[in-house]
Amino acid sequence: MRIKVKELAGLMNLSPSTVSLVLNNKPGISEATRNRVKKAVRELGYEELIIDKKEEKKSYLFIIHRKTTEETEDSQFFSEIIEGVESQIKARGFNLMISYMDGKTTREEVVEYCKGNPEGILILATDLEEDQISIFDHCNVPLVIIDNYLENKKINCITINNEKGVYEAVKYLVDMGHKRIGYLHIANHTKNFKERYFGYKRAAELCGIYIESEDIIDISAKGSEPVYRELKKNFEGKEKLPTAFFSDNDVVALCAVKALKELGYRVPDDISIVGFDNMAFAEMTDPPLTTVQIPKYLLGVIAANTIVDMKKALIGLTKIEVGTDLVIRSSVKKL
Image 1 (cartoon, rainbow, N blue to C red):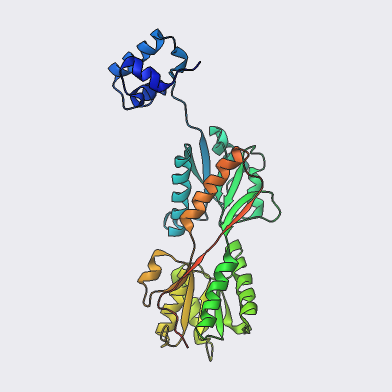
Image 2 (cartoon, rainbow, N blue to C red; image 1 turned 120 degrees about the horizontal axis):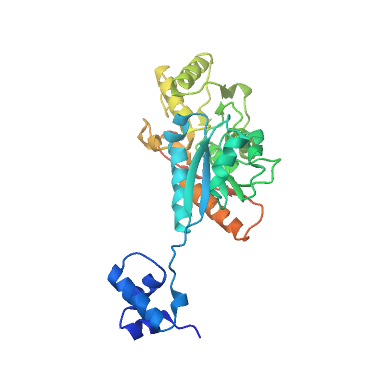
């Protein structure tokens, strides 16, 4: 019959916590006490209870896909997801290895990533293309991608409910009396912006407003200053602007506010603006920006739990969409 720690502690006139720490080879006990406990346990005939070797924690590999170093290191969006993954993996009792990849990463480099024999791989895949994910096909471990999903690949993913977020933003503008609502659309292949485009179209239909084709402004520039210049030029070329704009993200929204002010428009008195992401600067702008909140930290936590539970065979192939919330500030006027 297996003796209980409490019983052992009583025989040695020690606290159960002290005996437990020694048996499990945990820190916090002096060497003298540790040796005394081990000697007593052996003399009592329960040597098999002593764990002499420290059990090594198993690890998960977190790969952060990025186009440039600056996009990852300077982005609040990415940093909060990374923090969520890291904290939850550690809370579940595992280590986390972090590596980076870009569009030039090769299959051989992925093999190097995997030499640590990870329990599974998470990929922060915001702008990852479908052909890039194929370099992980040979990895015989659970795989979860974050902030993206790929229709033609059987890969678990944790992503944002973009359509819901856009609908809430557009409906709010309609409820505030706006009937002509423009759209500042980032025209690239990132899945999030594609979904926000279709979300805008769907929201307009559900809210019963007509979309003027000229009110959808496609933005091809990259970086705050080029985006601001492109928007200002576009606004200058229009005879009459909508009473409100929904923007694909907060950076574009802020550039639009700057351009409109320089052209003599007042925000929100003349034109209202709504962003997406709820970045830290959104509440410090003039006016503070109404925007869609993404639970970035939660994305990371859910991804971490998903990959750990996959290893335990608790879940199968899944796509999880994390909901959003509208944060109402002062950049929208009621008409």
